[in-house]
Structure formats: C-alpha cells, structure tokens
Length: 391
Image (cartoon, rainbow, N blue to C red; front, side, top):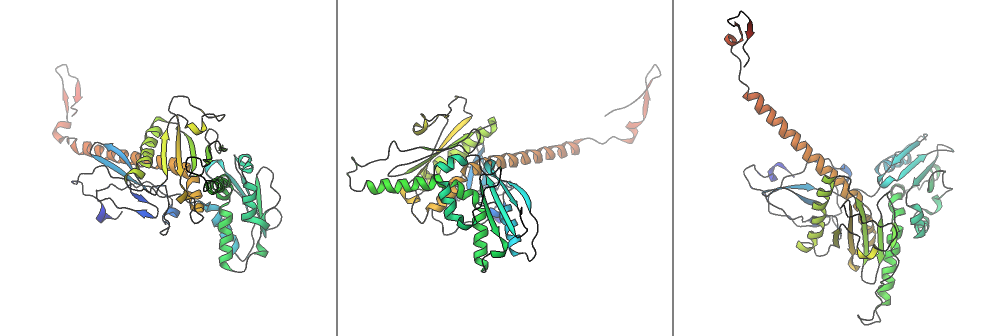
C-alpha cells in the first residue's frame, strides 16, 4: 500500500471485510492499516488469469472495538526456492562443480542435492514423513508420470531420488527451465497423489450418478477416507463423493495466543464465502472431529481446544481439468500458509508494542526536570553531616 492510500491518524478505522482473493479482487472502501510483517519476496506475483483460489490475501485482526489491523496475506510458493536456485545455477554454468547440500522444507520434508559419482550428474533425493501413506494412494504413479527417465535408485535414508545428467540436458532454454521447475516441485507432486485420486474418484461417481434420479443416485457415502499423517500430531483427511471432495486438516495450537489468532483467521475463511465470494469453497472450523473422521483410529478429541479441524469442501467447479492442478497446489499449502501468518501477525504486533514502549520512554525522558546548578551543592544538617540534594 502506498503512502497515498494510508489512512490519516484522524480517520476512524473499522472492521473491514476480507475481500481480496487471488484472481478475484473486490476492494473495500474502508480505511486500512497496512501490515509490515516480513513476507517472502517470491510471493509478490499473483496469477491474474486464475479464477479459483480459496486462500484470501487479506485478513482482519480485531484490535479493539473501533480499530482493525489488516494483514497482507500473500500466498507461499509451491516450489522449493533454494532447490530451484541451485539447479538453475548448475544448468546455466559452463563449468561443473561438486554439490553436497541438505535442504529443509515445510512439514519436516528434507531434500539432499549432491554429486556422488561425477560433477556432471546431480542426485536429488527427498524424504517425506508420510511417504508410506502417499504410496498407498498412487504417489509412485504420479512421480513416474512427472519425472520418467530421471528416476534412479533411491538414496539411503531417503524415500525417492532423481538423477540429472548435465551433459544430456535439453538444448532449448525453455525446456531446461521446465525441468528445473518440475524438480523444484518434487514435494508438491509427491503430496498431490491422494488429491488426484480423490478428484478422479469424484468424476467417476459423478458420471455414475447421471443415469439416476437425484434421490437414488450413488452419493459415494462410505467411500474411503484417505489419511495422510504428514506431521507428528497432524493429518489430512480426504474423501470424494459424487458432488464434492472434502478435505479436512487437523492442526495443533501450541500456545493460547496462537489459538486466538487462529480462530480470528479461520473465522474470516468461514465468513468470506458468505459475505462476498460465492465461488469459493465452503470452509468449516470446529474443535471436535467432524462426522466424516470420528471413527478413524488416531483422531483425537481431548476437549481442551488445542486441536482444531478445518474442513474445505471443493465443488465440481473447483475440480475441472483446467483448475484441478491449481486447486491441489493451493490446498496443499494451507497449513503452512495458516501458521506462517499467525507468526507474522504476532511478530508485527510485537514490533508495534516495542515501538510504542520506545515512544513512551522518550516522553518520560523529556518530562524529567533538569537540575539547577545551585541545587547540586552539598548542604549540612544541624549535626554537621553533609548531603547532596536529590531531585
């Protein structure tokens, strides 16, 4: 937001509806306070032609009854930026060099990029906590489709490996960039398998229900709920039916303040569709497990509110061939996006509090009276003791 758009201190600020979505923007006429929390520079660009996105770029945090803090919530990128930069440098370098680097990503994912044999052959390996769950839902087929000839024997301690021969790269620069892009999306493509399976199952059930009356159509109730335990205490639950795909996230709030911030953010997700964006997926939030997953082993309901369940309902318009890939990418990054912005909001508010304390200290320092030279002299009591006057 430019300085011209900043509200003056005398202008009242009030609750502003969260209306700016990636590809669908509705500007609010009400004044805003801009968030200066650090955000990834790589997320500055949006897809102007994209019609669907269910992750809002603006969210509101109540400060008091008359003020509101608007956080600029940009989307996180789907690829690993460090992996992409290393491969881009190696692909465009005239001289080969040794590489041995471990890269950490969200959700405990680890990459290892190295040159174990020769400098001209780069080995890229990935370790994913939930890889056995992903294999059960078609991850191997997705990876073979995406990487084909680059798949090699898996490195010890990792789940999947690719080998890139720098001496046999495509001649066209565009093809090189596409290869770098696909490898940097290794985590995204690995995690996409259960979502692709659910979308394909949705299309199958939708096709099967066309010949039936609405009352007798196969709904898909009782279909498999795919469980992806991608973190130590958190999981994703995915289920397909003839008219929707339901994705449920469980998330753990470690601190009371995180729970409060999370509730505010998720309330905006829930309310945004009702207020302004009718094409967005339905979002539900609750502290007890939804009905779809209550009978699944490992689902917890401790009654403390430390665990929250966020449900996304993706409708057929979100699952078309033109939009499914973007939908999968968006919903994969929801948990990282959600907790990232909780931390960014806390960091911003802490910086504002520190700035306010510094301002108060300046006021106190200016209010301290200066001591006159005559008052600094020593004085004596009747008994002969001397003392210095303190002010």
